[in-house]
Length: 414
Image (tube, rainbow, N blue to C red; front, top):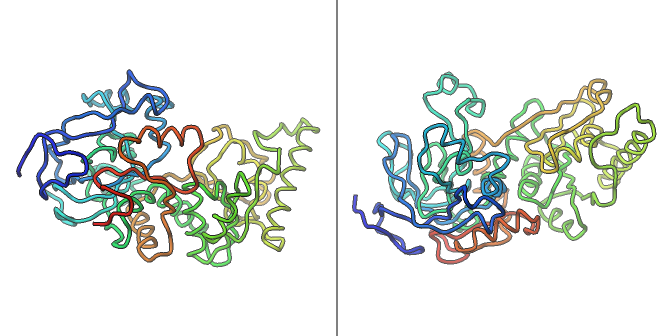
């Protein structure tokens, strides 16, 4: 394998030529803070010595997710310190949990992909030698499961990324590199939430309430529900996001700014406080019925705000339905009135990313044109910190964002 010290950003090296060093957007403990402080472009060694099941990917574009805002802040987890406890000596973090690119080198046991293949990378990693994985248990339950590019190093904000073979799926041929890098983390997370928890997998005719309908998760969820024949209703924060959600397939939208009962549930002994909350929750439920045009409650509620919204989600969910949650963007102390939970036999289900089969199923929906990546903004590699700063300040556009790495221009396809 030919080696050279470096290749400039955007210059495609000879296929399979791995330089000794590469350009990366690097986070170091001394720079922990807001993204514009934490991220800095540096030249670092190219990851080498691939394990038998690993692949080196030449990154064409990378997706932007909130997890590397956390990585830059150093909280709620100092990911660098966590890896140091496991023996990692690098002392830095290269983030990025979404990527599109070209297979550039393969480990000795890699069979599904060859050098030159065009791939999209998902962020789920685990050890193939884990007893539960070897026994056929969903690898998402493995104690070895980690999110690549957040809990692991060598993510997509660099010219080269090191991944496990099973993380790779075939790039949808009609998608440019930037769009191909934008959908997998949020899309696969949404897919597992909506199809991974039988018997509450979304069915034809199901009403599904989707919080944050115009965001990265929500825009994927709306399309996945419609592809299954369901009826998605999106919750948004402003009326100017309604058309976007409807174009994706939402039957209607609710502007949450029209209600004020959000937050942790008042104690049931606080009669005045509880009554005020109940009035707000009922008004929200009526708004849902008004949007739908009939008095049907959602069989599934797609949750991720958490603390502010879980009480209403449990209340609004239909008898025998499920609230499925993958995050807590407004906080983690979720409360609920257990009377509505046990008497109406509702389910509150946690969900985290997706396994290989679910990632491939989502990728097929994208390939078939049933799910659009909803790429709304593209940044040059030099603006990696700026893209994350927008996300940190909640000023990012609807849908998803991508960063060009090896790709030279917006819309470029391989």
